[in-house]
Picture 1: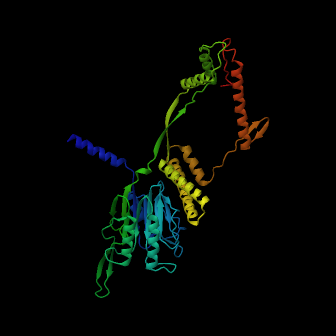
Picture 2: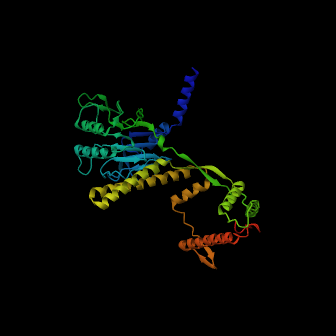
Picture 3: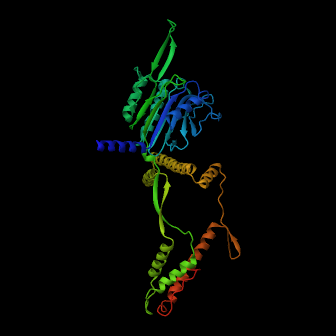
Length: 445
């Protein structure tokens, strides 16, 4: 009994330490401006990382429509100047807007992703634009979803498809065929839309139900249908593991120079050298001097192991894979130029830029959320564009020098002269080791 109890406690602790994300899809019905508090309630009560909201009639100029701690992404359809699909994304989230998949300006599709995960919000409206019909829009939608599903990433796709999946239709069949070919599983199996509708014959109000809001994924997780709240549509959520997005800690060794005193270091080095036995004919041993200096530095200023944090190496690994693939394609293109190869290279360039952007965003989030006040305000200054590069100015031979190349050359000449001096020093004492001791000065330290 004790063994089983310990095992259950261990499993519970493991589950609690696992990083999980919850994505939600909700049709607010009639515009988001009057239901922003309802969206905020859903986010806070369910701990949502990304909330896709459709039928929003969202105007980007209406800056007051926002949720604290979340940024807003919107589609580019802008019917009458407004978007019908938006996403509230947690500020600390690793998900960013995807640029690798092209979505036409008349499509209500939002794609957010990380190097290992992809979240897609979909809205298939009743009212179409640019001469689209249900058939043409559905055809375009399937094309976009097919392209979005061509990935090894864990993908969560959902929203209001306006297709009653409880009844047979050509649109339902097209969606099911796509899911089968893309290896996507549909999780919702209960009604998500309810409305009291008056019967035109009997004038009696009848409660109609339908399953319009769906979630497709290629990964395991927990789906949930929330109670109806200020809308005819219920909010549907999906929670899944994003363990690969954790921040790892790296170990590194650095020497501490607190209380550094060159005089003490010089005396200790000379003392240790004088204790070594030399003969007058012995060649000077440069390795011996190096070992003595290292031993002295380790004694007074030892190397200490510290931990440094950076974004997960998943980004670096993904970036390296893409770069290697692009390198192979560039070689292939140089030998046999083709439009198809060039198109693939351009797509990889976009993916590389997205990965770099994601890594920068993760670094910035770490600095903004950290306890280091200086790092925080530096990050804020960078965001506001107030940080300026400081130019290094040194006085060399009574002249102010600020040119980076000139400074580099001067530093190089300085250290070369020190090397020459040490080399001459060693040669000079090659025959005097047995008669006099080496004298390391503070200046040379």
